[in-house]
Image 1: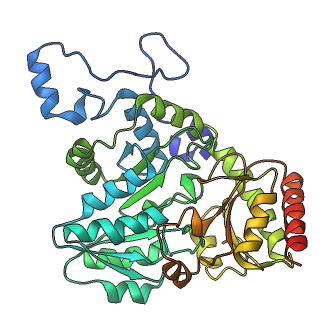
Image 2 (image 1 turned 180 degrees about the vertical axis):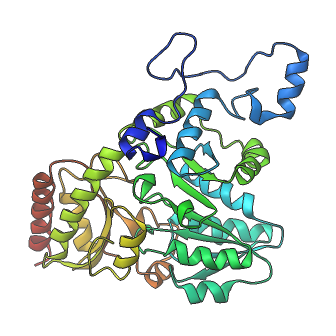
Image 3 (image 1 turned 120 degrees about the vertical axis):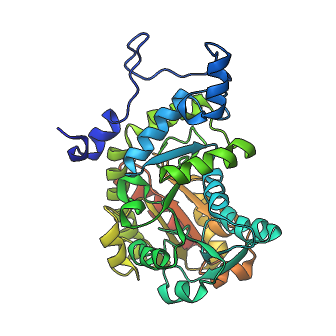
Length: 399
């Protein structure tokens, strides 16, 4: 059977694997080394001039990293992929590769906090302009494009308000103007959404999240054309040193083996938790694209194969009610990050988006009492019961 006809979980287990010629190991070995021995000086000269044809130094790549990248490229239907040391490394690598001196980028006004900081504080220092637009607003995107625009950046679903952007429609705009469209698809993972198939040029993921799934690796990946990835690898990653260690690359591949079945459970539990919260009298609003009340539900339905396990909600009573809730959960852990097999909660204004001022947060809908939830794969009855008792504590504490 052709690989493109195989199901996702089968592909995750069998596609783009490296055959161990030395010992026939069933699980790929870890090439835990910093450097590689050349047969002779001619080979050394050649490989240093053709880094994509072999291995010279692990900052430039390793066999373990190469196997991971081949798997990511297959999952995203890309010509090539690049693995780096964190999700922010993936984002900044993609942006620096697409940037030009004196250039301009169009960016949604709600993105992950550290991504916002890079746009707001880092890029302007080097002469790159940034224009912020409402997520998914096609007219604002069109109107923001200037002669020096190089890049349109999209985060969908967005962190933490779960805004959905129609990738296909934005791609029509960027292609018309010859711009690079970069999509952060971390909240969806390749299991639920493939931006390149919808017209994006580059897709990035914080692989720390759903791709790993177990909270054991900090990593990032980007995928796109071979030309773009080659330019990202040399000179951007080569000189900035955003390297992913062989061991972390190996751990990430182990986690990815179960991505398909994990995402099925995340989606199933996510919908049930969202419906529960949406009907609770102490909850003012739930942000989850699977709910028909979500303003971009139809767009999510069109471009995603499931709605995932990420959501946010506003508790009535503001930040004090939010504090009581987060101090009262027992199964949900109060922690940063997301996409783990176990359920997590966090206070977005003071955790993932602490870099933004209160005015900046409120302007994009991040309220003081907003709680972000990463729904895990536990038994759903236990998760609902934990939410119920925590919200009961909120009721008692805010009388």
